[in-house]
Amino acid sequence: MEAYQSLKNYNTFGIDVKATRFATFSDVVSLSDLLPDMRSMPHLVIGGGSNLLFTQDFDGLVVKNEIMGISEASRDSSSVILEVGAGEPWHAFVMHCVAHGFGGIENLSLIPGCVGASPMQNIGAYGVEIKDTFDYLDALEIATGTMHRFYNKDCAFGYRESVFKRGYKNQFVLCKVAFRLSLKPEVNTSYGVINQELERMGVSNPTIKEVSQAVIRIRQSKLPDPKVLGNAGSFFKNPVISMSHYQALQSEFPDLPAYPIDESSVKLPAGWLIEQCGWKGKTIGACGVHSLQALVLVNHGGATGKEIYTLSEAIIENVFERFQVPLEREVNIY
Ligand code: EPU
Image 1: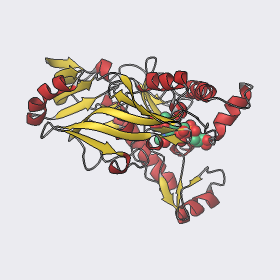
Image 2: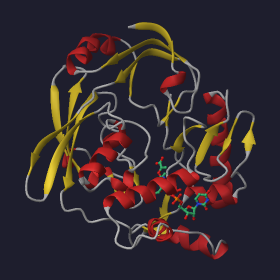
Image 3: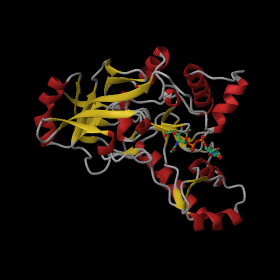
Image 4: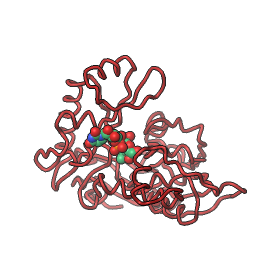
């Protein structure tokens, strides 16, 4: 275990803060050895660090999950269950599935981060969420050192939500995640831009590989590569508001895009609201709002977490003044 480790290379915003102590683990035995320290001081388990904003040094133990491996647990005529180490990079796992013709997560290509983070926040993109293929996960309970299995119904999945962000926060370390993937995949191109991109590629009956390629092209065209420009993907969640609030806004802003959830609620694209307030492409000191996607805050180099947090507060205030819609951060703040 190392003392006073810089976390700059362990968060995709590239924020230069320190942890009092830092350790990695690559199997359950080495994780178990860390449990006494995790019980006795504040701790944070990280994977790819792609959904984090550090606003100060972390006064405690940061542990990085490096449990690797992809193995087939079972298969029947229509599906296969793969068990995946929580430290596997998410995109590499998607590419593994696409290469083997296992369908279900191709729309989630190029999402940064590790497999262990995928159920924590029910990652989603282009009409697909992880809960659609998630089968179970094994997680070590920090207090007791025992392994627990959680099935889909146990995880309370919601929009970028799970029980591991709520009631079980900081209580378990996810070690292995199992997905049920289709051996007879049907592609999901319900999200408009996928069809447009496939048309541009000249594809009419897409395979999962082509859907994956279309998603990669779309993401590369507007989302910054964290290796080039520090960011944590969508900084805010898309807000859900009441139908009556939406109708009032719509009469004032006829171009307001909206996605109906049910009869009484509507989801709005936060990127649109932020862009309307004039933030898209704005730079404040060393940080700013991405020029191609207003939902993404970026570190142009040397920004502190506090600066990025302050920027996010100004955006939240501005959007609320203009639309009376409260934005919630998607990124975890430390
Ligand atoms: N829009 C703007 N200006 C912008 C950005 C978006 O007007 O600068 C509007 C447009 O009307 C566009 C709509 O917002 O049609 C939706 O934009 P986009 O398809 O880019 O998706 P998003 O709602 O901004 C969400 C997810 C992304 C995911 C995409 C695609 C959240 C918080 N974000 O973004 O997830 O990739 O949909 O499914 O739900 C992430 O979570 O880190 C992430 C990148």
